[in-house]
Length: 357
Image 1: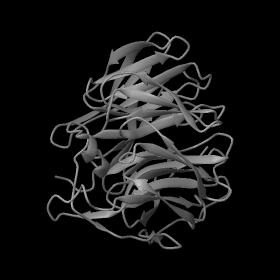
Image 2: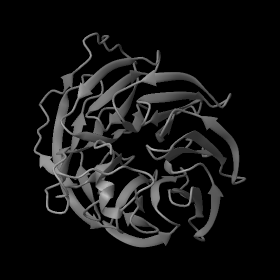
Image 3: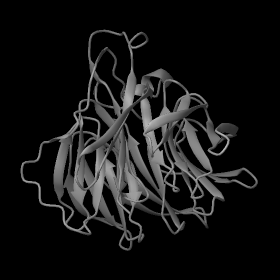
């Protein structure tokens, strides 16, 4: 059993995607400046852009986009699950769960409250940490720069954080086991995958209410939304499929992908969706499925590392970056050639991934 893997999924009994751990919680505090474990960090230059990975083993890796080298690795006291750069590129947010130690099955009684940490992507300095709920999963910024939203998998809710004050302003109930999600480009709606049931919660970020649930299929893990707000996609882990939803009619088309799909990312030009197929630690998948959203057909299956999980594409649509949880690597894929052109070693058990705009 890997104690670093997605500890919050024990509550929803997800045996195929994540390996759960249980035991006593170790209280943790993030230092005012994150500890840099890389002693040969190059100086940040004007115009430099970076990729960040959230490593469940207790770190964040920072990769220079230009030379695809890790320029810093920051030790974090806790399991870092998800990470995202703000739309203006000035803030990075990450969800952190407390460290766990294995002392019998006490999972149901222990305090599992986690934190959202915010830091400057250029100076690497911590800006603020905010205590969130039990088993925090993903964090996403609204495009208008007003909010960061965090899913609490164990609490069946999301938290809305005011970015100007770094304070929680609203708690909104969702379905069971909320996990990955995306927010529409107009900043009005969050589409939250509820792993503990078969639904996606549609959250109105103007009224701060759940407007409805869309029933997409078994064990939805993460969602994606096209920039025009017309098409929703969701990975269905238990069905080894991608659900494509026409939001006007709620008609659903399902496409078989790899085993144990985790994250999905819609390319900025809306042409393709990329699905990372993770499998399990005992039987890891190692592929990325490329789906044409117009034809609703698979165009490519690309070989990656073991346990492909997080995925993001560059803003110019040229490259896709995938975390491989069981190889501790990131695959860099040339989208025109549909093949891996570089593999980057990062921290232990990389999960979420994000790139500066």
